[in-house]
Length: 310
Ligand code: XMP
Image (cartoon, rainbow, N blue to C red; front, side, top):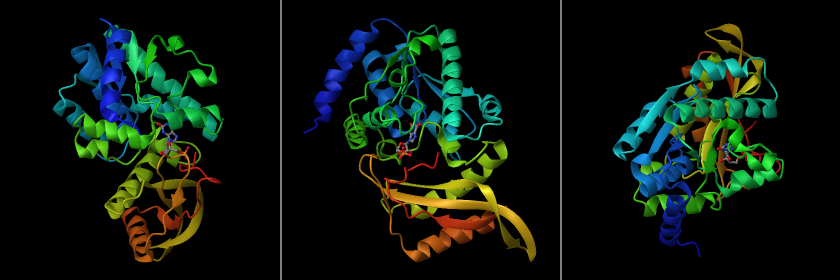
């Protein structure tokens, strides 16, 4: 049986020993994994840690403000990095899922590398968990934060990596979050992938597409609050379809809604949600987002699909 209290005690000792008097930055997206990792390291080394929120322009509505506020409340020194333009530039012309994942990873680590140099740190903390490592090793997807398994030495980016949650699965990370006394808006948070909305925009990732999928995501999240799903979100297709808006033909966008249950993200099941909930989501998405003419629901389990589309 996993014991969060013992895990925390042991981790604090391990982190202190590894870090010594060095400085650390922690890449914190506000998700449960990276926030628990950040808080744990903060508990171990205090102000030797600076949390870094990289704004890639692909976060959910209100996310940057939310994360900065939470970190402030936790009394963790924080830097907000606006890298939106840089990220959209890096995605230009890239349409293949793995190519996009690699582009995100490179931009993410070079951005952090710059902050690391400015802050003169030796360590970067990140919230990598066991499922990230397993999927990358199996070659299913190169998770943006798993480096060694794909033959990349983190030192090429200019620092050492500290991953206190590497041996844990998501339910255990939540237990650690609760034991640490983190607010439930963090410990019970729905998982959101590191590469953010880039995994939910099929084809080239652009600023315009991000606006559409961000709004659709907000609607899906609002309508599914409290139903207890593991993850619920929207995906923007690269294809278009014929529709009718204001009495005129519109060759418009297609959104897929995905609502899954899972315990560890290794397998997942499409949720049999009530039909009227789907209808409500579809009506809102197609009326509140002018370019969307079609809304689909994904009924595929993992496997054979994966949770994210890219
Ligand atoms: P998949 O799509 O592989 O997703 O079935 C499994 C879980 O992992 C999340 N996910 C990621 N998280 N970096 C992350 O931090 C990534 O590159 C990444 N890819 C997928 C996904 O949201 C789901 O919870």
